[in-house]
Image 1 (cartoon, rainbow, N blue to C red):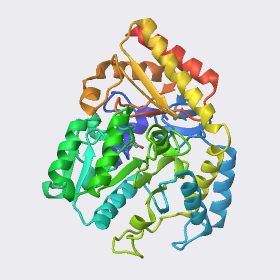
Image 2 (spheres, rainbow, N blue to C red):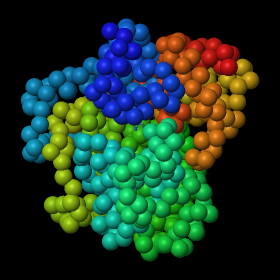
Image 3 (cartoon, helix red, strand yellow):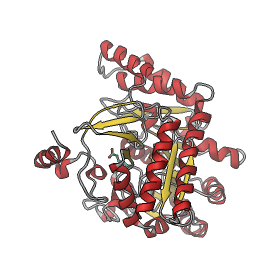
Image 4 (cartoon, protein in one colour):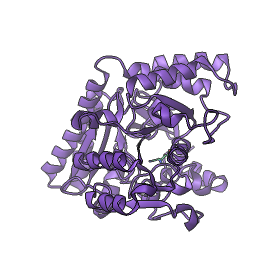
Length: 429
Ligand code: HOZ
């Protein structure tokens, strides 16, 4: 079977041949690779071609594919039952594990996807404050719930839709979209709408417009303005959670801004270890507004699924081992340094950055601070680079608007091979 034949067949029965748009390779052109299996840092497609995997299922596979301890936990949990629709001890263990690692979270609710978690966090923020307006930022993607699907990154950026069709204007009338890292705009918006703002939601390090950090002055002021105006600061850590540091991106900012904490957090990806699991949490006061304690409704048949929680727990246990993040960060840093050097040697305008096991790069002389600048980086060059890397067995995200991920299974030799492939690709132009 070839990737081409599978893609033709898929397009007969699945819109665009894929179950999530960016996978279709529309941005970069060509045929998506149909993955047959994966192990460690590698994936093999239907034609038996091996790739060094820098997508890692878009973030969850922080240990690499098929980690033995995770596999064992999943096998054991599956043998005990796939789903009960009733509480289990493992859900408490996972909640306790997350709370132990993230001090801003006093209570947490488990759900099945990042979209569900973001949508529920938004409802809770509105319910808890009794306010309607929300602030989000251009290029930040918080899943595909209607109210958040405005000027989002990821697939919306890839396909050039500012906002999805099917989202009525009335539904997004309370969504205020501002420029990421723009201090003047948040000041102005709080001055005009302060008492109406339920929450400010952001990706602290945006991973859906490639990789863009919120600046420290911006984050500091966001925190101050939210506190001053009684709005909740909601961190979408679906990508960054337990990925950029053991304490997530909020621990990175807490090191730079004394006493810093968001009010609510949204998690996904790593906490499920590759299974459908996500969560939202925050202070006990806010979380107590959630049903069955409070008036904000939220529910799910597969929430806290026993197999997914086993997978997530086993993953968190591995990443909490001493030295895990130091090693992962050093490996990711060596990749980014290698790419930056190879580009410089070839005279290619390029800038890469990373935190923990998450990285990004742009064909641009400096690191962009907002979506507008990301959109102005060299897309054609990215696309040529993507294919040159793919042809050399390196699988990067098939769109320039997505961050990349290194796992603990990536060896120094994998990084060297990747940098060598990039040097070839840069030379080819
Ligand atoms: N929304 C994801 C990228 N930011 C894509 C998920 C997928 O295609 O699996």
